[in-house]
Amino acid sequence: GAGVSQSPSNKVTEKGKDVELRCDPISGHTALYWYRQSLGQGLEFLIYFQGNSAPDKSGLPSDRFSAERTGGSVSTLTIQRTQQEDSAVYLCASSPQNTDTQYFGPGTRLTVL
Amino acid sequence: KQEVTQIPAALSVPEGENLVLNCSFTDSAIYNLQWFRQDPGKGLTSLLLIQSSQREQTSGRLNASLDKSSGRSTLYIAASQPGDSATYLCALDQAGTALIFGKGTTLSVSS
Image (cartoon, rainbow over all chains, first blue to last red; front, side, top):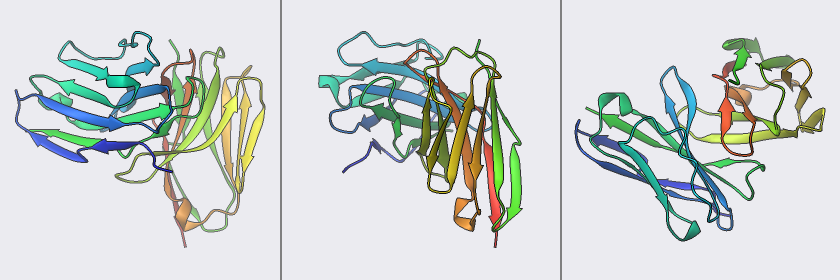
């Protein structure tokens, strides 16, 4: 079946612009996660959605970052007023339940010039 | 605060060798531990998931063990092949929410 998909695959933007990254999870998965992978930094958690519960936003690095999940399916990660340090690969994952295997999308590579 | 360490950071072996990748963690209160594979420019592929109550999991040439008391997990790869070349990541689920990742071991298998 279809896996987790993300769009765009690559995004180049200028410092100060806003960007939106999209994640389509596997159908029926109730849990959705966003992570960021920076060069030399490893993977870090950003935000987690579980069903209709309030999201866990504890990993968001600043108030310029926000995310929403509409209808319990598609999620959008928004970065406002992008900075060069926001350059990274943004990975989305979903799982059937929150303690199950997480299935990752291919990521969006964001470059802020 | 949970810390996950993977040693070595990089490993090069000739084809056919058996090898062990190591993962250590500081807090044994975990739900599960997962091993992932990441190919250059790609997302992560889940290899094995070990629940907190389990000691090991096997899939094909891969075997992962978990020793919570010592805060260690190993990923054993038997009869390595060039196609096994990738970065291997260890990740812990501590609260049924986000995974905490190590920085990975980059494996290169030469033919």
